[in-house]
Amino acid sequence: MNRLLIRSCFPYILRDSVTHPTLNRAVNILPELNAGSREVSHVPASHSHYQQETASNSRLNSCGLLHTNFDLCCTSKRHYASKKMGRKSKSGAEIKATPQEINEIFNAKELTASFNEIVDRHIEQLHAKLHLRTSIGDFEPLTISTKDGSFQLMELGEISLKGQNTVIVDMSVNPQYLSEVKTSIIEQTGINPQQDGTSLFFTIPNVTRQYREDMVKTIKGLSEKAKVRLRELQNKYLARLKKVADKHSEDLVHRVRNAIEALTKDSCHKVDETSEKKCKEFLDPKKGKR
Image (cartoon, rainbow, N blue to C red; front, top):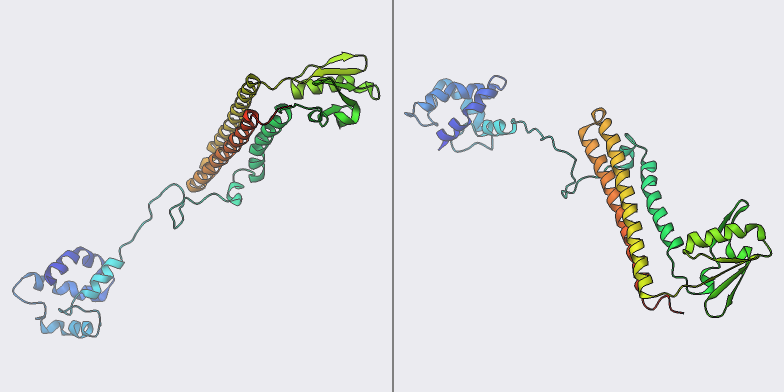
């Protein structure tokens, strides 16, 4: 058993015997062990100094030989880390790029802001242009952009209701803003008001099932356009990353790429989440009734 152990270690012993004096002495007695006619314990007298040295080691095996050297052989083996893309934490999850690491290639704040801008624009578009307006109060806060600044519709004109569903906007106090008010109503509500002198009037549309379904289609279309812009922005940053990849470590480039893809995925999720909420608002039969 011990002879087999020694033979299995022989290549390692030869390798390390040059620099390790104890192993060097052990190699000198291996030919005698290989002869097979002697037990390990019958070491020639010329090697008695080796027996004395190994006897003091508490980790020796029953033969009093080579156990310590075998451990040395095992521990002397070098373990090289394989070159893998991306570092991983103890839990196995890939370590995300920090803002400091992203700043080595891009401006982290500008990167995040560019994606947020598309999401914010989409949300603003949904709330400004796609809204169930079923009463006079839904038109009062409309934003009117003029050369003198932005104002709410109720600040520029007097709004009143004629009959059940006809809205009249009297602009006699600020007639200079009449065209801006008309344009804003068309852009933000899709309703085309008629003009009578310094007044505008229009009919509040009935919120039918078909109207709701048409609005849902419009929302989904806007959602897809926003996600296309997000993916185009992602491809733009990935193309820039590819151009400078040879100037940075493979690990850093990999993690920054993952950060860009994760930011794109998160932004698309926000777009879908907002759009879905808006669709439910239009399809809710309890909303939009006058």
